[in-house]
Image (cartoon, rainbow, N blue to C red):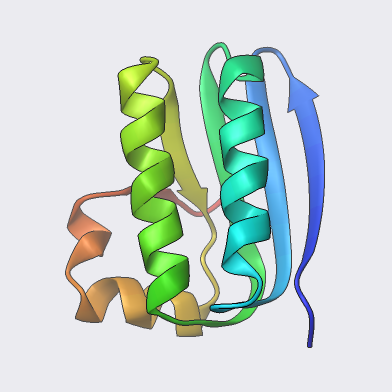
Length: 105
């Protein structure tokens, strides 16, 4: 399944909802969306991962890059409701303690 992205902005919070698979082929699109969203997110950038069925190491790297870029601009970077396969990858890599993870906005 291909990856689908949708964006929303409300009260300084910018949300990117991701559906499908984040892999070597789709992660550049997510990276681009995150990079473009950071200047628009005055308060926080939320990445909704509830619809992600699969994520590989390139997806993890993309999220880490997004976190670093957000920190440079003093924008909160929050992972929303990661689906079980995504949460498992984050836990295995011990990044669940690095990212801010919330059930919902």
